[in-house]
Structure formats: structure tokens, C-alpha cells
Length: 291
Image 1 (tube, rainbow, N blue to C red):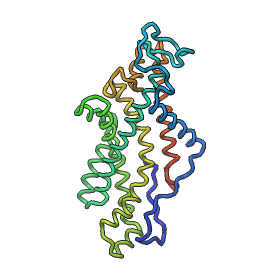
Image 2: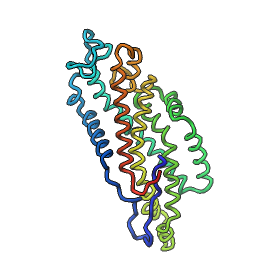
Image 3: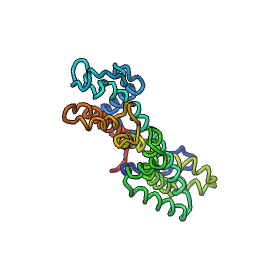
Image 4: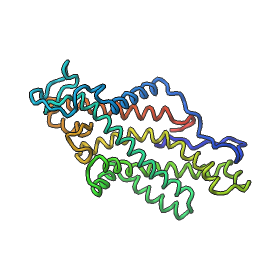
């Protein structure tokens, strides 16, 4: 999340000008186009899993247990004879949902904290800054596990846990962007023209500060997918037998020697989707962003 540039303001702009955004969006390029296609395919899989998965993800066929990948089952079957392809496709919905909701939770909390810190006084900024620094220094998985210890396991607590764990990063970005926007030429001109503080904040500070969060949030979805899968792998996310990639990885640990496909395909799904979302987020970053 450190790769987002601060909003650029045009020289000579006045308070009456519309709020400027931090640069135009770059073209996707080959990598971004491929990533967008992968994300689109994931959306289709999440919306219509039967279209790509074929078999029912919960259908049990003991006689077909642990079949290797082949014509009848492209990804093989698990210990209960369930089709791994159907379960991987069906698990896309849970992973995308957790990633998006967790990002919205983390972004929402981070935006509130960042705006309050950036617009508040020195004492408010110091208090919020210390709290976010401590939370940011803690391992994300540890913070998520603490939240789940309070709320209990399940898909909704997993969304909240990942969201709250990622909120400090968003808060630090928004706080810096808000303070930069406050000291810009546009805001100084608006103050000299006697504009009300509320109008200045709504018209100039917030648009310039919040627009980059769109790109940051896209990157955050990929991160949230990985961490949500990690929670399910540890048994505190989506409970079985619901198809979820992290839980499928956990189920396949016992059969790594005899049926490695049980873990290989859900693991690849996590890597491919998280990478595609991250690449797409970087492609959507405003121009002029720095590393």
C-alpha cells in the first residue's frame, strides 16, 4: 500500500475549480488485461458456479473417492468422492465475498480514522497515530485471530477480522493524503476567499484524499483473499463441508502423498486470483504513483 502517490494539484487552480484527481488512470497493458480477464472469470464462477463446475460441490460418491485428475473429473476427487473442480469453482464465491467485504470493512474503518486524524487537532492526530502504529506493527494474522477469539469462528467473523486487521494501513494512507490536501494551493485559495470549512473539506480535501483509496482497495482485495484463506486453513473461517479454498487446503494435508491434487488446485486458485487482483490493482493506480 506504500505505492500510492499523493494527489497532485494543478498550478493556478482556484477554489471554484472541480476537485482534481491524482492523475489519469493508465491503460491496463498486457498484464492488466490478462488479470482483468482472470478476475472476470472468477466473477462468473462466483455468480454461476454450475456453468463452470458442472457437478454439485457437496455431492458425495464414496465409490469414486480419491480419483486422480482425468476425463471424468478434471481436478480429481477428494476423500468423499466429491469433484474437486466443482468445489474449487464453488469456492470462488466465498473467497471473493470475503475479500471484497473485508476490504470494505478495512477501508471504511481506515478512512474514518484517517480523516479524523488528518482534520483533527494535534492531540487527536497523536492518539490515533499511536494506536494505528501499534496495530500496524502487529502481524496481521495475529490481529485477525484476536478478533475471531472475541467474535467466534465463521465466515462473517473472518470478514470482520481481516477487515479490522487491514484498517491501520488504510488509516495511515488517508491521514497523509488529507494533511497533504489541507496544505495545498487550492485549499489555501479557498480559505482566502472565505469559503466555509465544511465546503472546503467536502469539495477539495476529501475527493483528493479518498480517490487513491479506490486503487489501494483493489490491491487490498487480493491480500484479504489470502488472509481469509489462511483463517479457513486454521479452522476458524468458513466451516466444512462448505467449499472454501483455505479449508480445502487443510483437508488435503492428510493426502499430500496419495492425492496431492486435493491441495494443489485450491492452492493454485488462491495464488492465481490473488495475483490477478493485485496486478489489476496496480494497473488501475493513478499515473504518477511512486513505489
